[in-house]
Length: 191
Length: 214
Image 1 (cartoon, chains in turn cyan, orange):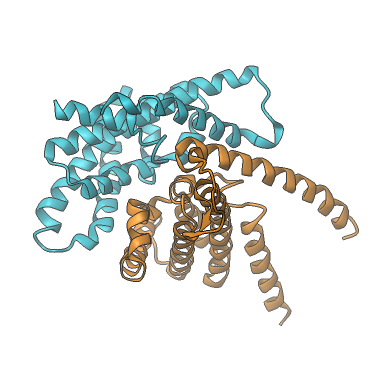
Image 2 (cartoon, each protein chain N blue to C red; image 1 turned 45 degrees about the horizontal axis):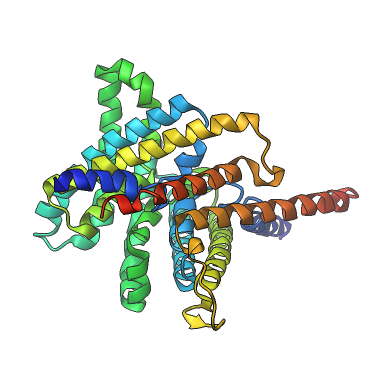
């Protein structure tokens, strides 16, 4: 029950893109097409679950016993870079059809702040193992929902003419603000 | 002598260009995450800006120094290793010097590692240019970033609580909470982008006419 709550809370009420502003660069840059956005969202969800779980073990069973917690940043980012690289090779080799959906986004993911942030939050909030899995899955899912919805909204921009000085990025930021406002409405749902 | 002058002026022009014309947040839309998340208070914004500028300058300088030794295939990982080393340094220093601000910034100090500006500068500039020039380039980017953070932090803290750096300036201020939460941050950034683009357009027409004689 509480695990389901963690998933829902991280995916909807505390959406990682819209309340913590994480992963904004790809959120703005890759939300031009629906297909691209969904692919990126899927890739982020897969990678975030795997890396956070690995980082959980690395932190709990290596860094804490050795009192090397201050090295967490280096260890986390290296394991993320390594896992992403490995995943890219494996997916390209064994699942070519999957690779065509989200393979091209994998190299971009290492510098996606969502991935590192979920690992850092995992440490700060002291989740248990299953809590970590639930939290990382919820966060990835929430980010995917947000970017896919954004791509859908941006499609409709073709029919409207926003203020010229706002530019392409500016109007996306306004849309993100409106979406954040809408997601605020879920806040009372999980009390 | 004259070669030196040209180098210096090139350094200066990249420096200025990065602050204003290709401002990391307004024009490139890079590093938006932290700029929105840490600007609820002006003090947090200032500390974050300084930290990013510091990591940016030092890491660019070092990457540029060893650029001939880095194998191309693993350069991204080398960049990250260098960057994260300095981020850890900054994190430890902040925890001792300004413990409250450090707590307020939470995971966002660690997230400097994935701030796109750092990788962007390393990949686009430091790997191809000498250390001095890379340092200036990064200093410009860092200051441009800090500038936006300060503007956002100033507006958000003033509008939310009528105070700056925690000192109450406007008494009986009706706090406008929307600005301190996520949607308000997005709207505020968008409005600043409008103002920036208007200024830039005006500047551009002015500088085009000024540049003509050359």
